[in-house]
Structure formats: C-alpha cells, structure tokens
Amino acid sequence: MNAKEEEKNRGFVCINCGKWVPISPFTKTLNRNHCPHCLWSKHVDSAIAGDRMSVCNTGMKPIGLNFKNSRTDKWGGEVQNELMLIHQCIRCQKISINRVLAEDNSSEIIRAYEEGLKLDGEMKKKLGINNINVLSEENREEVETQIFGN
Image (cartoon, one colour):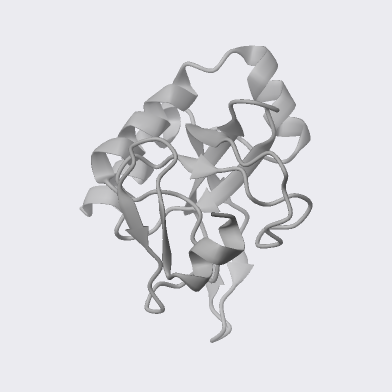
C-alpha cells in the first residue's frame, strides 16, 4: 500500500515495529509519517514535506533531535524551541525532520536525543549545512523539560 492509500485509510503500519499508526484529525499535523511507538518514519516524501512522491519507501531511522527555527503561530505569537526528530533513510541516506508530537513515546524521544549525541563530526557538519543543528548535552534540560515538564 502506498502512502496516499495509507492516509486515505486513516493510518499506516510502521515499517520498523509493525504497529498500526492511526492518523487522527485531532493532531496538529497534516501529514503523519512517523510511528509514535518507535519514532521510525518511512521515506515517502521527495522534494517537499507532504508531497508523498518518493520512490524509496524505505525506513527512516531517528538519529537525533533539533529545535525548529522560531516561527509565528496563527495567533501572532512566537513559537520557539519546538522539538524536531531528525530522520535518516537507511537506503538513500536522505535526511528529514519531523515535528515531535504529544503522543510520541517519551523514552524513544530521549533515545533519539542520545543517538544525536553520538553522531560524528562529519555527520553533524553535513546536517549543519542543511540548517539542522543536532542538540547537544547543553540542551538536555530543555529537552527533558519539553518531554516531561518541570
């Protein structure tokens, strides 16, 4: 089943853990493409997030976290330090980022954060060129506060 058919069926089977992932109209995202249980994604987008045009369709492993650049929300307020998952396709190595959602497994978010701490300098440089800055140990308190509260 391709990504468009999965979305029409209001969910998909995780490419990594095999669990059913429902797509809810109540989440803040229009295109759900990572599993809330294991955080793996599927390489479904090609050029633009949500285009569902990739022919790769392979698993994308969570390799770290970053903060999305600040933006203005629909009420005119500034949103800062929104946690984002960094995914890397295990076949073609494409990198993408996806918003962390409230229903995502907090232990797996911490695991992704710790995986990011282990990335080598070459990978961090490659990500940095694309304006993706992997969170470091200095960000631990902010990450934990966002996941677990104060």
